[in-house]
Amino acid sequence: MVAFLQAHSWLSHAALALAIQGAAALPLGLLRVRNGEWIGAALAIGFYWGREKRDHENRLHRPAAEVWDQGWFPWEWTAKSVGDLLVPALACLALALLLGWLGRRGRGRGA
Image 1 (tube, rainbow, N blue to C red):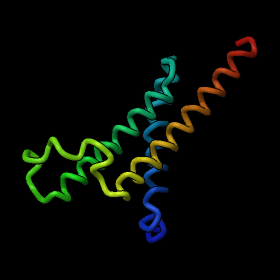
Image 2 (tube, helix red, strand yellow):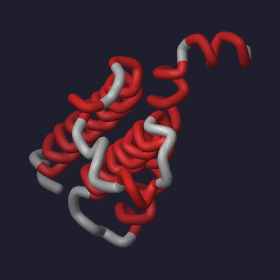
Image 3 (cartoon, helix red, strand yellow):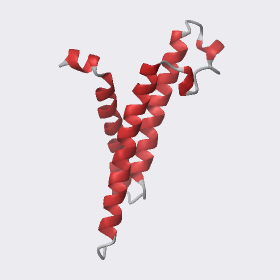
Image 4 (cartoon, helix red, strand yellow):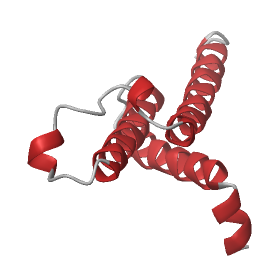
């Protein structure tokens, strides 16, 4: 199983991003905060964006204080890094769209 996840890191990244999204959205939903699924998606995407930026800094082999201004944008990253952000982001956005659609459908039935 570990070898499979290492070879398909995008899958484990998507699963973790959805877990982050859920961990944020569920308590927000209980507190009746609207659009908690989008807030959770933003947190998960931000986590992976920061992770890939830091990976880019590490690949430069210089102190972070010297390269803090580099690697903010995906076009500066490797293709694998872009995929490691894109797949979790798409998973979270798809779930947020689905939950938003289901919520609108539920409210439209006299709720």
